Image 1 (cartoon, helix red, strand yellow):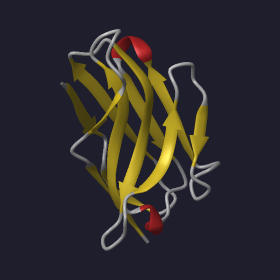
Image 2 (cartoon, one colour; image 1 turned 45 degrees about the vertical axis):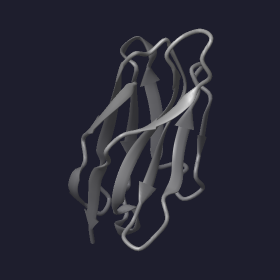
Image 3 (tube, helix red, strand yellow; image 1 turned 180 degrees about the vertical axis):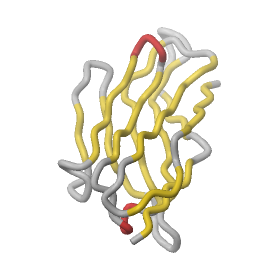
Length: 121
């Protein structure tokens, strides 16, 4: 079992910044990719950013140039630095990991409970 605990959400004015954190714990042998998704009211959950163990990243077009994903492999933690926030960034942000509990197990996805980000205009 892998547990994910997110933090850092809140209310910010347009143009402001927030940093989200997500720490993974539990029976972890290794973590492959870590990422962030978001879900706005009345919309489907959408991809935001992803980072591999080696540090390769990819982003949704809507956040490129404004958001930066990073990770600390020693702490099993992923971060999302969000700059130049817009009202349309308002959503619940979810952490996602691909982890395995032993060498012989496949990687399984896990989700955090979500953290609210609200950007006021």
